[in-house]
Length: 441
Image (cartoon, rainbow, N blue to C red):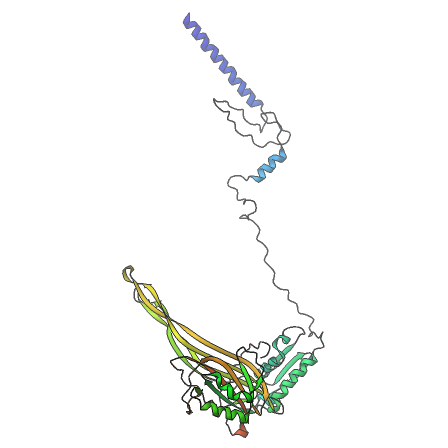
């Protein structure tokens, strides 16, 4: 009896299981395409798989309509795994390259020179001057340089439009009539002299104390100077000779005994005496020896460099002179010890030197009558030592080992034409002229 009841229970459970399986199969077969699978309940919190995006109007397994717009936004904001799409705000791998910036627009123009300010074209024949200048590669450069000093360089690169060009035969100028008049005045001063050589007397000296002004001040007529610390005076040739005689009797007076300098009108001539001073600049590893080092030597040129460029007026009674003077002096070489890696992790010590240099610069343009002497005082500056008084050796002597300070004096005197003075012109190329005019050069 008991066995029969157990058998009936088992048969009942089997029938129920078959009915349940048939119902699940029927529901799955009748579910529309795209619907989510049924939720499987297990002990604990319910776990379900998220339904995929459904089209608008299609019912999901839970019986709610899917929002096509929302699903599309979700799909676009969250790319699928493995996609190369870049995050928002950052360029992706396939992003388009930004366009390159275009260069300036270039056109052929109107084909004519602008003359909004009444510019005119003029050509000046400069062969009477350039044909007389020898030992100079480009003598016409002096004509261009003095025009720039007279007019200023900015008028040729700003409004109104202008052109300044020269070769060995012709100077070509395109500018306003007023500017053409200035250019013509400068060219006439070159051509009228036909490149004749002029003699300038240069006397460079130093005085340890500036108290020489006490007796000489009554003879000096001040001249305007734009360089800070520099003073200039005009002195008659008679008083200049007396002043030099009195200065030469001073114990602190040193003279460089500069001879007469022969220079073509308008050209530049440089007198310089420089002495190289060597020092240990750096230490470099030696390629052939482990932990070995070689000293790298440097060099500083100390001394004096004086450049003058005169341009005489048409009547020869006045002269414009560009004066450039450089003084460089090494006060001392500052030793600096340095540590270098050696053998076995040990350190070795070497020494380099840093030069302590004192420099002084003068770059001025002066105009004065040729029957007077221009005297320049550079102030108490670094003073290179001259030869002993009374010697007529080199223009600039060797520098002293003990650097000092002194009042540097420069006398410039016009001694007339070279033929009249009986002085032969030196056959040497002129020094290049700097291009930094700063308005007054």
